[in-house]
Length: 241
Length: 245
Image (cartoon, rainbow over all chains, first blue to last red):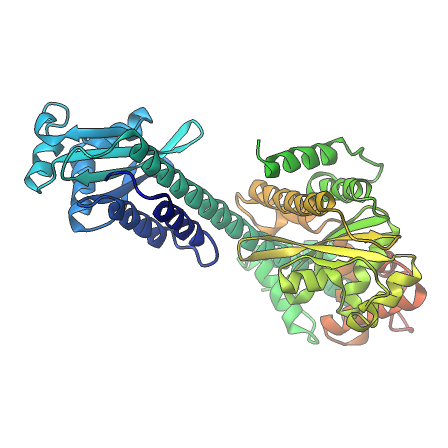
């Protein structure tokens, strides 16, 4: 890659940012990103791995099958540029594979065999944390400093996309739990009112009746409340089983 | 620090510094009440309210800066129209800087009620994250005029903090989230309303939906807060079946 034109670069970032809106799909997004990064290099491919909550790396996306294999090799044999970038939080650039057999005894010969000559890897950084790495597999030493910082910026964009997705997904799960809890709580209160009126007791005593009935019959409280509420105008018989 | 972070830090501080009042609830309900008061002050409003929608368009969780605004928040649900419901349905802020400008057509029942209570402008902000929606934050003003850019951003930030507060409460309540542990946090002062709803349904032999409508109609006609009426029903000071209760 010899430094890309500003125009092309601008288009690239706009394209990437464009996908950060509605209907965001992580895998699709990362797939697109690796293809874009690969496209910056005349003859390169890119792959990306992410850490799960326990810090274990998993393959996420690659621009083509050969890059996918390069990512999987690293994960399987435990050495390679992406693992180094992940561990050190620093980019690894312009490593000639023929001279890297000592550094990566498992990865280097396999990558060379697949026809690659040089490799680069970039950490996906979030403040002090590293959440993954992106590898670029090429044909020659071809990244200057400007190039490297462009690719690192793209890795940073990937992180923004991922964070957004994680935050929204987490929020949506909690939201649906909240709405579920809210609805079932409302149904319980309504059932208390129904039983209180029908039996001429206080809402607290009505709750005791409902709860005891649920326990004796091994129903969930919310199930009993639901059946009281949906059973109207028939009034519940909570006396036995 | 980005602009968003600055607003978040500032507004979070405003909510944290807002003094508690006697009668404030613990947990989520109390934080939301203080958030409404902080929003009222920061946005030069006359009142603010948060409503969370439950199933069937019911108002599940609620907080207001001043008790007088409880009526105005609830009235939207009685009438089925208003800025809160529009912000929720449209997933975007509803900004009405001058109520005399078209609002009477948009909310033929609600707008006159607002006007009658001295409200001249109203702004509503959806409580949402991604595609999930919870409710809305309403801001009422006694004078006409738009929010400034900064006020608009602040209002959005208040809405974000309301969402975070609700979700944090939910995250804490989540382990073994049997509905049991949640009443004070989630339903709070609304519990009596739902009990009253059940009682009135039995008193009149009608559905829960109709029972709520009767309660709302009664509160509206008597110009009383729905929560007060509900408390009277639960305490058997008010009965709808005019005979025995």
